[in-house]
Image 1 (tube, protein in one colour):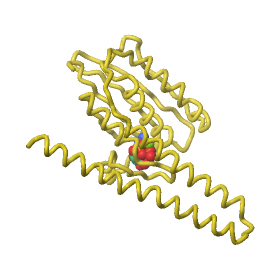
Image 2 (spheres, protein in one colour; image 1 turned 60 degrees about the vertical axis):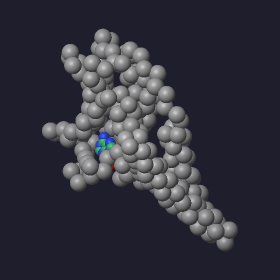
Image 3 (cartoon, helix red, strand yellow; image 1 turned 90 degrees about the horizontal axis):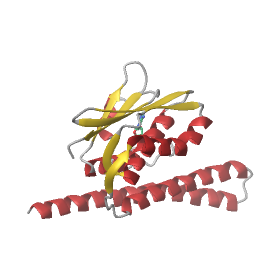
Length: 223
Ligand code: ADP
Ligand code: MG
């Protein structure tokens, strides 16, 4: 009975995803068709239309690449991994995007921090969270990444100086396709939560006292 229940739950998630995908892809397609028809009719605002069309295509591109990630069979390859190494890799990857917005990424991570995890999955989690942190900030500032541990837990904190998360949407974070961004996919936090679940880890989201929010990943060291 237990297995049946798990199965039907999975189906409904798949159904939910499929409906979401159809919707998310159909909107840009409809808009592309409209602009093509306008261009066919010979309008003069070609440059403007081309730009919008490219944006719509880019949106479909990012949705499909995130979906490819989800559809990959997730086989765990867990080992003892250096937290600093994973964070350094992610920072190298995202620094160009941060620099474009005059955002600094500061790391407070000792070389002595290790966690038992699937390296590529946890790097994906860090990419999703640091990317969100950068995207949340409209003004120059700093994204801080810190790692710490005690006997029972290892944690990684990602702290931004964005607007923080409004109370009324906090329960929606991680729902497939929930996004407040013009060109967001709303899949990043869903993937993040899935991966952390596979690690018996927890994601905590806090509003900072002064400005921005903190996303905290907590690994139990007893796993
Ligand atoms: P996406 O980034 O494509 O919108 P995510 O699942 O990564 O999808 O995030 C969902 C939503 O959560 C975002 O659209 C945004 O509203 C909110 N969010 C996530 N991270 C932050 C953050 N650091 N600061 C403020 N809001 C955030
Ligand atoms: Mg995101």
